[in-house]
Image (tube, rainbow, N blue to C red; front, side, top):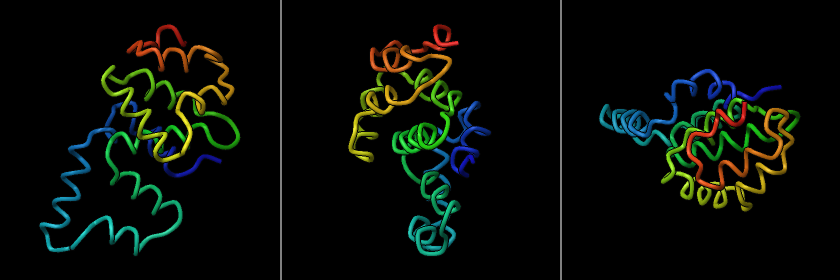
Length: 143
């Protein structure tokens, strides 16, 4: 069963909506400006379960958000291949190393190990190599 975070990411990320830092910053700032206090604290204290996971992910910075989406896409039964392609193969070259660092900081293993550990039918051995080699947009070689 698909969790809420990957479901929302799957629907919105093809257009890159959720990967834009300015949206998170604007929402967090406006919440405080309108006198509601700290949004992250309120979400953490007043929500739970899948909604809390989704809201906290949406309030994190872009690299941490991408790391969370990648982990959810690779976790459990089946791999969300479209999610992996959307994130891994649309990164700018200068975003790759910071994403690898963010993933390793959060999950205490390398992103390369995680990608290599999942069996992806459409690109069994190419995804990790493409991503790790800073190849930029490699989706044409993966489909």
